[in-house]
Length: 330
Ligand code: PMP
Image (cartoon, rainbow, N blue to C red; front, side):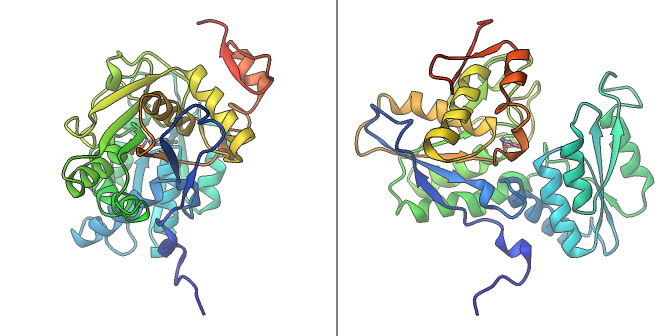
């Protein structure tokens, strides 16, 4: 019989698939790594496993302990999944702008969700940073993973994502492309690929226009999970060779094309990473092999990126082909 002992044992070893339609005119091979094949549906399952393992080893998380983290998205799902398997309680703090559907996913896994007002300053006692700090201090046996500064985030990608890509491409990868949020994915995977290839793999970050990684000031953008208005410790600026800035319109257009033309239903940060990869691949040759990491699936974005009404409300419009979007405000 061939089966996993627990759901957590299915984290990682996600597949690569070649893009064939959206790559028209490009000579290089462009492969995408589908992180939605992880049991919690995103690359964050990888960091959750390693962060909880390390906290147990270091005695920061003891039997019956509670995980407290300000998160509304994929990290919460990953942590909830691993915590449930090991008998920990999870308390997640979410701002009220986070949709009910997203909160319901967390509670479905057995986590508790505390909702805080969005319209308050970060230093306010009601802000989601302050509330999570207070809960972490008040709840006995509480552990706060802090994905923005926890070194086990990038380490999980150094130990799993990087080696998987090297193995699955038989060491033929020439370029690695990933979006930058906490920076854990690009820093960990990029460091491994640079080390194992004698520094021959080029590491390319993708970033929303407006975010600090591509020289912005934190100006708002709509793509979720990537870009920052500060420099997290999980990000190692020495790893990427280049950061490519991508607009929301480009990201959403590509996200929709991936679903319609490649049958790959993924989130907006995946579309963004593919846009950056295709820009870099435009000048690459037939022997080049690009691997683009796609962090999550598209089901969580049906009411947004895949919804014409939502796009129009934000100033995007359908292009004549009917399935792409252009920013009419640009
Ligand atoms: N895309 C999505 C949807 C994410 O949730 C995240 C994680 N914040 C990222 C991309 C970026 O990954 P990282 O935090 O490792 O930079």
